[in-house]
Amino acid sequence: MNPKTSPNNIQESFDRTLKHTNFQDITIDISEITIDSLLKDGILKDIPIVGTLIHLAKLGANVRDLLFLKKVISFMNGLRNIPPTERDKMINKINDSKEYKVKVGEKLLYIIDTCSDYENSENASHLFKAFLEEKITYDEFLRSANIIERITSYDLKWFLKNTREYMGVDEVNSLISSGLFDLHYEQIDVSVEDQDDYESSNRYKTHINGGETGVTISRVGKIILEVFGK
Image 1: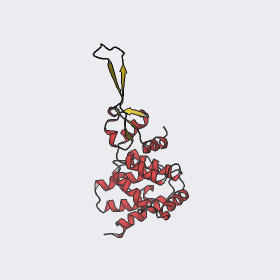
Image 2: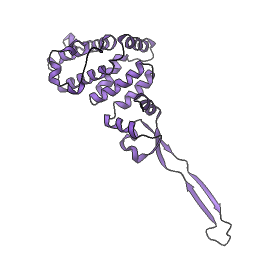
Image 3: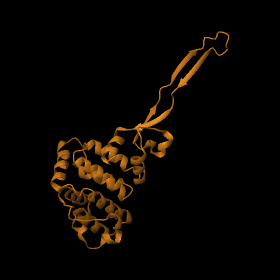
Image 4: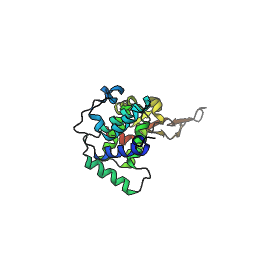
C-alpha cells in the first residue's frame, strides 16, 4: 500500500485538517462540487485530507470513495467559522481526558462515513460545531450524531418544523424508532359511578379513560431542536 494512502495517513491528514486548517478563506458551494471537479487542480487540494483522498482517487478509488470525500468537505465546511485554535483546544481536551477510547478525529471519520449523503454530513457538522462552541457536551454530540446519521435530511426538516411535545404514534410514522421520540403510555383510569337507581340493571356505570399510546420528544431530540434553532 502506498504510504500516502494508508489508513494511518488518512487519519493523520484528517486530524491536521480538523485542528489546523483555516477554512474561512475557502468559499465552497457543496452542491456545485462534482466528482470530476474534485479530481482537478484547485484550492481544495491544499486541505490535507482532501489532497490525500484525491491522491487515493487517482490511484483507482471507486465512486463510494469519491462521495465520501464530498461528505468530508461538507463536514469541514460547516466548521469554517470556528478558528483552528478553538478546534484544537476542544479536541485535545477530549483526547487528553482518556474518557473515550476512540480519538475525536477517528470517531468523526466513522460518523461521516455512515452519513447517507453530504447533507447529512453537514448536519453532523452543525452538531459538532455546537460542541466546539461548548453549547453541548461531547457525549451529547455523539448521541445526537448517532440519530442524525440514521435519518434523512428531509426527516430532520420535518422534525424541526412539525414536532410537538406530545404526538400520536401515527403522526411520527417511521421516526418512531429514530431516537428522536420516547413512547408514552397513558395510565388507564377506571371509575365506577353509582347511579342510585336500585331497580336499574345498569346501576353501576363504569368509565374508562386513558390507555392511549403516544410519543414525547426524547432528551436527545430536545438537544437537536435546540442546536438547530427551534
